[in-house]
Length: 201
Image (cartoon, rainbow, N blue to C red):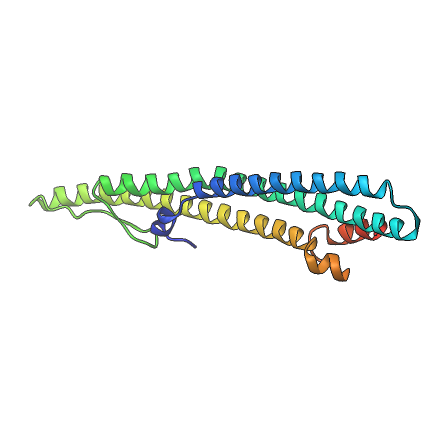
């Protein structure tokens, strides 16, 4: 599990920047493939015979693969934005608890333990009462902090799993898959993608 200091050092907002960059690149890819499709359609309109038919079938297969890549990258953009939207407030919660505890004079350890300051008033009875109150407050901070750290850790792992799954889907349409007719059936939609390309190739 991540420590409070490790969570503080993270910048989930960078995921939004990454999403913007990926989305921009995907838009460029989509526009480029659209222009290629237009040129291919114009060419095949004047190319008859078996060669033309074979080339047209391959072009259609490539078009389907390109559309699949673009849709998968759209999913990647959504996953990045969703991760940012959940991790930014989760990080803020952890940092806020730590800052509040430290500002109140408590010590926050990297294992999320919160230690109360020691009381020395010179009166033993007063020290016992005051220290008990500080220890209780420390425990409240610690319970909140450990819960917030667990929440962040779970959200972070969920985001990583989703992004990995999308990456696998994108790799399904990779060069090896297209050129050697190989694919990962275990990948998300791998069998469906292979069947789709098999029908049009």
